[in-house]
Length: 497
Image (cartoon, rainbow, N blue to C red; front, side, top):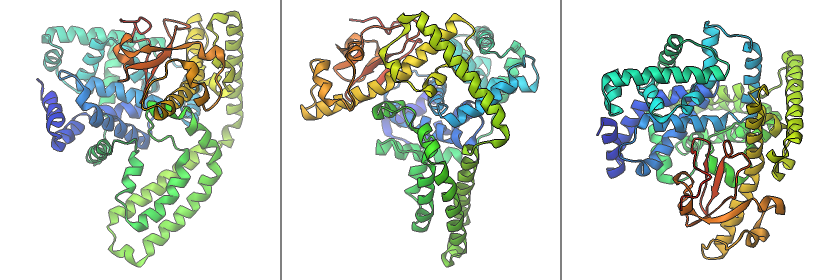
């Protein structure tokens, strides 16, 4: 048993906060650097992603196998959490502008190395498990080859070969994403990314909040938990922050997003709240000035006022990012036209391939169609099929959210029982679901599905068959959660019993 596994066992068995804090200290650099790359370099968002990942660890530690390689588990969870954040339109527009500016760059300059960051972790996550662990252990956990070999159950020489093969596989994956690097340049980039500095004091803050979150058992964000410890004066000021910052894409677990049946609520709020955010910024600045000059401020620790000033700065930064960029109006118009043309091409392709269509596509907005394509182009047949896979996901999520809500309401009124058939749920749907959609689903014993789709219930609602067996995600809707299995689970469409 490794030292990390010993610490994890101590936390699981005894609830040792000391052991958990040590784990956070050891792996925060890996998680924070991963999140920072995916969210475009924004340290505030990276901190919130890291907070969510370690809260997941605190809650799920008891379900992890005793021989788990924790670095790999944390990296994958960080990828999933950060990817959810990137669905926000504000982040998407920033990356669109960057993509247009560097589209023609194919050299090994510093600019090309910087281009690796947004796609690096997604590529690492596509590696085979052994290759992914080798990369994470060698570069992100900064283990020597001997330690890598021990962790993987092999020799130092075998570890060296494994790392070399993994680097080559990673280079090819990045090349498919439009980033061309030599193996040597890629190794240098990994070393540089692993050295990303973590803000001082962040480990202690995250460990405390994660433990509180795990104990509470709720989906509270780091921002809300901090408010619990604030004074009355601070709460009076920061309440303005809460009202004004509802446009920000705070950490929301994928299961909760599905339960609400609205995966893009943060994007809609962003547009509607910009005017309010600007006005509230002015009020917040005035309240902060009053708090700083009030008589009790003299006895208030300077750190608390600095924290409030930091909240003001963060909120102002958000307002600037949300505000329209008039200087780039022509460029944004050209970008909009570009993506509109690509959406038209995808819809034309769909007309020629009706087998790729599902009824749920009729409810997609123009934004949903653009999201299915971005950030890729439509150069190959695979690009079209991949885009349609995402479009189907965008159409299915609201429907599955309605099913989940209806299922929970039915169980509440029937002593926790699962319905015998889907027709029984019709009267519980928040919005009517067409027959053509409902007929794509069935109720199955949960033990007939692969482990990744096990929700902990005896029965689940799931798709009868895929449209594209190679690419489509399969979902399992239970009474307490929705689980998904993507193309990495190759047998997800096969009943195991």
